[in-house]
Amino acid sequence: MQKIIRNMIKCKHCGDIIESVHRHDFKWCKCETVYVDGGKDYLKRGFKHEDDYEDLSTVEHD
Image (cartoon, rainbow, N blue to C red; front, side, top):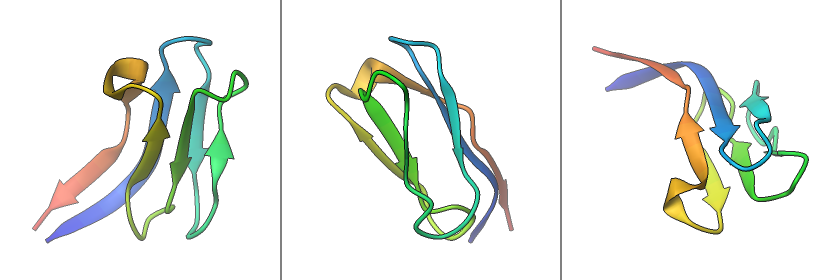
């Protein structure tokens, strides 16, 4: 099982670093290419192409 410490990504287009801090905390980057959601409950990403973002999340595994 995994424990999410930080749910964060970086958009490779505009350079925004966005973090979801609680469940259903949906955030877009400023160019609206990628989003992050889920806070510490789940890791959800949205993107146009899979290589549009860099994952900066911190996760602990039991």
